[in-house]
Image 1 (cartoon, rainbow, N blue to C red):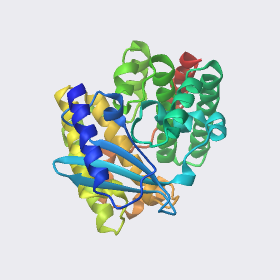
Image 2: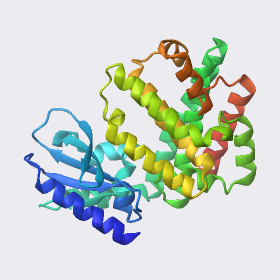
Image 3: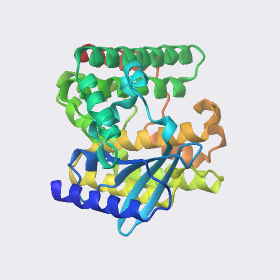
Image 4: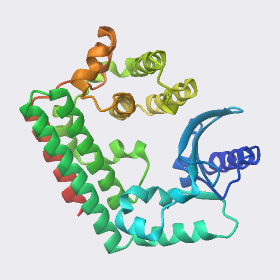
Length: 318
């Protein structure tokens, strides 16, 4: 929906005009940057400034729109050397639309990065990066199984499959949208049949996924956690995402994304504790709720199959 993307671009331009911060570069990413925003889309806005010491993230309600704002110190802007070493970490540059870049240097960096990402060397480096990530997560999953940490094994093996899926999505179709991962991999019929047999998801809880994630957020807020992803505004953002997926009857996509949201919250608030210990401080009712959206201890056979499926996605990306 190009008109929706253009409207949100104007919202972003209006918003940065209200800021007192000296903005060196400003850009929008996500669906707005790609030009395919819809009625449920938010604004992913990043500004680079020399007036902050560390990055910060905020969820802001601006008029009727939600802005996911990231403020980044200018010295954290990647240079060509860093991008050459770790292109997978900076692939977001490919879908950004620039709002402010008075000297054109950010535009030049972006265009150079896109050329590198699309080159043989760039793609090979991305494949190497993701292969290492996937292999390490699967290795960790196997180590967890040996010590009866099956929840941690489940999270690690699902993380391996997800990262391999994002690589497949980017290399095959040049797509960066999180929401496209499940629909594209569903085209691999045999792969998805095997995934559905071993994944931690149960389709009986689709209608309750929103309430479960909201209860988890509220519990963490009540415990004093203040991450941007726990804000009330983020609850609204999450509900919009769910409504989009329900309208499109994307049940697996909905469960997978809500599981991903919850895994992210766990990592942000766990201080490195394995889920087996972390969950002991959760109310029993919340533990049961989380199990309904994927926090379950997978056995060795299912964990092994998820790692095998991850390897398959890597192979398809080569």
